[in-house]
Length: 579
Image (cartoon, one colour):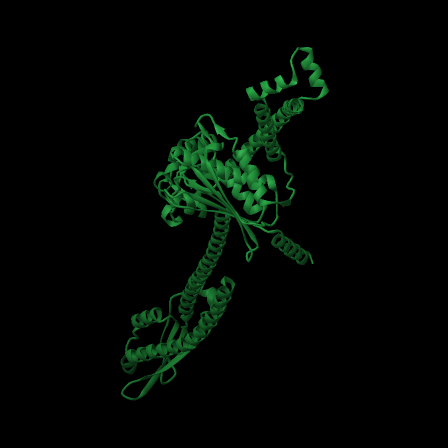
């Protein structure tokens, strides 16, 4: 654009130069004619002045002729009468050196002019002069004026070109700067961190999109305002900002806790000083690490659960050994005492002087047979509990196999029946269990231990809630049914506890959300359960509840045929994606 303007201006300049040249030539022609006319007119006036003196042939008016010669640039003046005799002759002022040089160069030409001298309409002589045409000085003046005007125009046009060029460069630089700033702002806005620039006084100089989302202030509203006004929780960090600016070293505050929506959140705050010379300030970066911290805590909790599971497995193995001895001994005792008349028993009774009938009577009298039966039943019950502990604590390795849903529910109930909280002094055995199982339930493909973990978490939470609510008759209603059209198995665990509000119900599956006091619950049980059902088994986990009306947890798992169809569909999609 600037180049085009420059070309146009140069064209205008050439046209002006041509116009000035043509104008000067016209002026030269016009002025030359004017000068000659004026010179002839002046000579005519001189002829009138000397006419009377020549007629009377008086003394020539030399003073006038000398004055006229000097005034009108006459080199010589000669008056001749009608008889061709010289009446008078004078010389003008001697030319200067400059005039002589200009005359030699032809710039000041000498022209012979002649005018008749008339008196009463009669020619009585002539006046002849050598007139030096001094119009060149006027031409020089006009040329100088034109040169000055042309130089002024040239200077103005070049100044205009320079101005336009500078404006274009400024526009280009401004556009580049705007594009650079827009690109930089786009990069800053795409970052997930809060980025805030501040000067040493604490006024905001930079504000990205994430800062807008967190604070609610737009960039236009935040810029040039104090940090404590638009982002109050960073106001105490101004000492760190000043320290970072002074030392030119970044300052990092790790894992800073804050409350948000009644939840503890964590963030890393880093202050980066601006190190460019002549630029003072800093950039504050705020990274929300709540999910990271919660994941770390979840991993720690999972490791604890694995440790507890390993401990439970070890304890189960240690219990199994003496338990086997107890049950085997009890069975042997029962066999020997029930068959009292065998030869070995008779010999032993004879050796101590009593009969086998007396031994039988004593055993029946003291209830020994009932005691042995109770030992066997208790041992068998302990064996079932230990077996459930082993199956629950055993590492799954994500092996999906077919399971009977009723057996899964009943086996975990056996394990839950042993749950006794010494601190809260409740016993799961005191809770009434109502089973409502559909007949001929189909097998379901699942990870049995993980599904049992989900059921146990729900049962424990419900039992604790009913205890805390002071229910006199705590009760669980367990339902298992099929949804043939949806291809799902439905498992319901309903309690008659205190229920929950809508706000709690909407957040109950969030990680680390708990209504229990610190140290009592981690808030991971139901979130892990939700993950197991929805992610590992592609099912659903929901809850229906109202305050004071108990809670009903609903687990829906795909049936075998439905799961197979889904797996085949996923394989087809994967195959199509690769082909």
